[in-house]
Image 1 (spheres, rainbow, N blue to C red):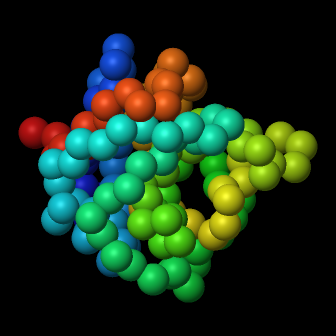
Image 2: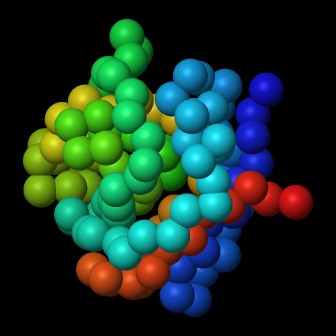
Length: 125
């Protein structure tokens, strides 16, 4: 069963759904989280206190609005457009990520988030 979460950043409040994967469940158990955003092209990522291995269905190319966990950097990722690793119009992570969910609104709103902005993720009520 999906877990509803709320992502907040300066000027943005957006709900999202975590899937029922083991990695998503571990992230849900660690909530609430607050961290400073890092940006990489049209991706936001930040370290989370979760350690998970690469899932069998992990992938490098993701869809706009998907949420990922990057085992290499122990980071939560929000994908909303091309990254420096993208080829053409694809959205490509630095390396494979475990896809853990999807935002429920317009992922393009995250374009306003800058390096160092505070991002908060909590369970939605």
